[in-house]
Image (cartoon, rainbow, N blue to C red; front, top):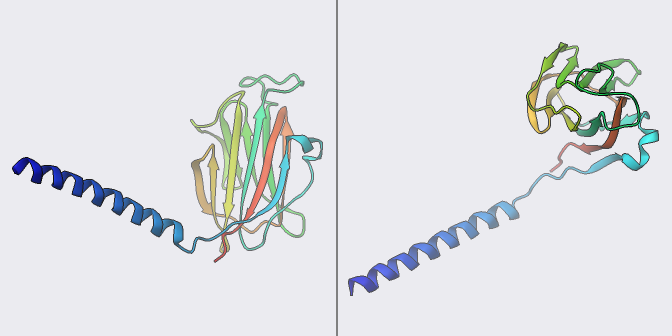
Length: 182
């Protein structure tokens, strides 16, 4: 009799756990989630056009760029060759640069003007693809992620466009998403 009660209690706990997990998933999936939409895309197939202006939404954005350094025809061999670098320059509506993100082949980055000196970042790879993610919200709150790890948070002025600069790198892609809307 006791054995049977223990077995029923065990099955009851399992059913409660599965039901609770299902309820949590249903709540998460049915919530009114904000939706970001893709507003710009540039991939390796269109890399000859990589130096064109990248339009940025005025109400906030997330820009993701991925470049591989050192895997190109040019004589660029990271980490010793300082020519191996790439970056994104963000421009105001009047065309003046407001801030620049630079990634070098030796695992350093700069975000000028807030971080003008090269800063080592353990999550940057040499001779491998690196990803930059810049998120900007109205009010100037910004976050820079390198290979999905937070490298910097702070306040930056609004940018109207961005431009990719490649020195010894091969473009994997650039994607811009608008700020999530409700």
